[in-house]
Image 1 (cartoon, rainbow, N blue to C red):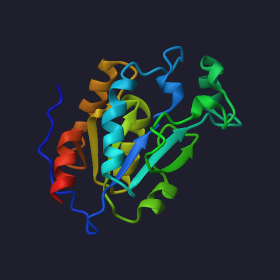
Image 2: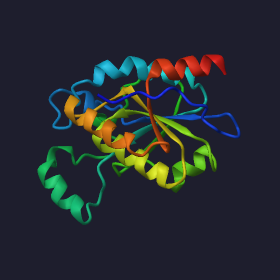
Image 3: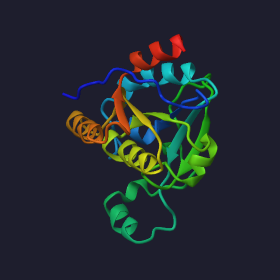
Image 4: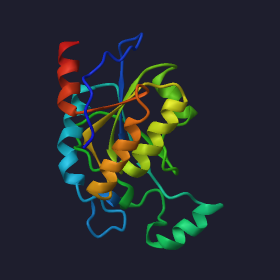
Length: 196
């Protein structure tokens, strides 16, 4: 069991932490998909509550399969050939409520942090991260962000893995990067935002 640390002040000079919502897409919600995340529906409500609370400071990411395939992606998509889909396929659609406001960023990489994402957020704004899958796209995004010098809070109850075991293992790994990474919960973040 991962220990959830008390919420720290995000030490953001602008006081403007951003929320990154990683890959809450149909392909991960569909039980028939080879990439199904069993707890997808369980994390959707806390994620949507966080999106509303971070109004104006939310980026929702979308994964799409890389095309053309190069290098190791060729072998990877031999295993997952059914998901080698065009970028406008409905499998890549976000499953977030239509009334919510967020900016969408699409990447053909597991990790969503890159120089383009850093430019959108500004030079040093901290981030909170939630979404799927904890052991894949969430993990890859967080590690790249901390390498870029970002302070990251991973919202444990608003992330889900391809299995509960993989979710817990990923959180355990991420907790070893403290204080660059803090494992927290959505209720802690909401209390902090309401008191700010």
